[in-house]
Amino acid sequence: MKLMVITAAALVLAMPATAQDLAEPVGSEASVETVEAEASEPGGDEGGLTFTITDESNFDDLGIAIPAFAADRDMPTPANAGGTAALGTEIARVITANLRNNGLFKPTGPDALPRPTYPQITDPVWTTWQSRGAEMLVHGYVRAQADGRLVVGCYLYDMALRDELARSGWVVPPSDWRRAAHKCSDLVYSRLTGEDPFFDSRIAYIAETGPKGNRTKRLAVMDSDGANHRFLTLGGSTALTPKYSPNYRQLLYLSYVDGNPRIYIYDIDSGRQQLVAETGNPTFAPRWSPDGKWILYSMAVNGNTDIYRVSSSGGPSVRLTDAPGIDIGGSYSPDGSRIVFESDRSGSQQIYVMSSNGADQRRLSFFGGRAATPEWSPRGDQIAFTYIPGDFNIAVMSPDGRNFRKLTSAWQDEAPTWSPNGRIIQFFRTERNSGKTAIYQVDLTGENERRLPTPVNASDPAWGPILP
Amino acid sequence: MTLRTTTAILLAGTLALGACKKDAPEDLPPPPIDPNAGSQAPTGPVAPGVGTNEHFVAGVNGQNVILFDTDRYNIDSADAAALQTQAQYLGQYPSVTITIEGHADERGTREYNLALGERRANAAKNYLTSIGVAANRISTVSYGEERPTALASTPEAWGQNRRAVTIVVN
Figure 1 (tube, rainbow over the protein chains, first blue to last red):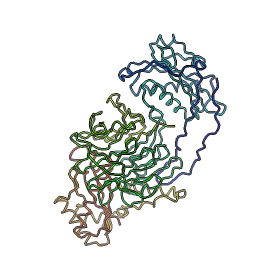
Figure 2: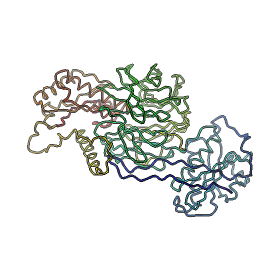
Figure 3: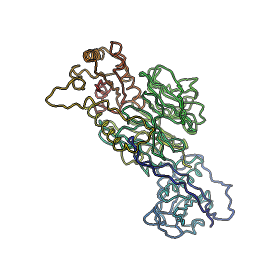
Figure 4: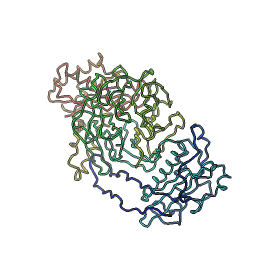
């Protein structure tokens, strides 16, 4: 029954409201402390698991029971007006929605299941869950500490083995209770699929309102499941194409705040921003290197656009392309050695690759039609892009240009962004005539296409890495 | 329609900036310059004077907009005729400066369209300078696909949106 007692918490100082069309800063995410959850048996065997799944299609039928997380006693918490017991139900609902929405499992949530008691969390009543056809069982608890913070424990059990497959625990401030639910979702997902986690991550995007001829486009952020939505700009000037820094502390995006398209680097903690490059020329299509040390941007000089690289701490820019066409965008390979980018030097938009210093440029896309907005998977094994044979589709290929696969079919899907584990792609879809936009996601098999819930129209999604 | 929209957005940005000026950090870029200030001249019974966008549009017989083919930015003979008319006006009123807005249709990716709009605006600028207009009288701005003037998703509407619009800014 021992849990680590937590000491210091990072204080985020509130900054005064800033100019530049900026809303109140929201602060970047603090890291969540992982604690040891109670073992069901002291010295219980952590290894030697026999349960493995290699064929993804099997997951569709994998029943997972996710009853309410138990509270040791019902305590008031700012996280839920109903106290920790109600919060335990809500956490199980978030996990259920996560696992269901991504289409890989058949979870049953707390609203259709009996509620386990606190002692049963580490000692499941197998017969209760077996009679419901569950193959996997998620149990958990939530406790309010004296300092108000929440301890959330998460356990995954294999019903056939009647054994524990994984467990972990986290300490979170009440406002971050959803992150504990996402961490638990990640624990279950990773243990069952062998893939890296992705639920505990955030998405930057552009929130769109107003009529097609006079759209308001605001910088916004949300959790990977669409919760915790926040606007970062007020909408007085058009904002486009945000990109989270790898540590979530900064955002690159394009703003017309001075009347011209310019890339700014926005500091999330302070709410301050500055130009990425003082060039006097239009800049667009910002990108981070995987280690956050470099920024790519595209700049038009006398109408000719090329790709440049600048250190994220400032300094001179280096021009990477010099073709007479439009060279734009750029996405680093995970090891930082290569950059895939878009160019119309052949006469139409196509995808090219080069070394990170601009050398050895060569074309990758020969699929007919146009190919644009390439994004290298964080796993390195795929490049997602906008494939334009006529309509606009999301497609993937290997980094050598082979193994083309089209994942979506609609009137206009564009601008793919990868989940942190490289298994899911988000993009935005524009509706013909109305111009309405929405963020969708699809997995690498082309299955499980789904619209993300956003409070208003949404475009330009940029998925950040897994949170610490 | 497009100009009015542009003005409204820029004004909104200016107001927001003004309201928050007290707390503006020191390292922020300079405040926006409203390139449409000229179009704010009072309208009414008095004919718009030199230096207003209305005067310019009337002076070039409405040839303030040139159109482009899909993904193209070349100046065809109709574009050249319009730009020559604009150059004549600028020759007649040497104090007038202009901004050329480059636009794209919605059937392109967003970032590429920003670059394409910039290329179109510069194509118009280069033509004007080639026939004698001083380059320092011409600035450019790309709006990509962000400011459509025709709202349908049809080839006709896209044709109207692939454009370079010359506006007077002083």
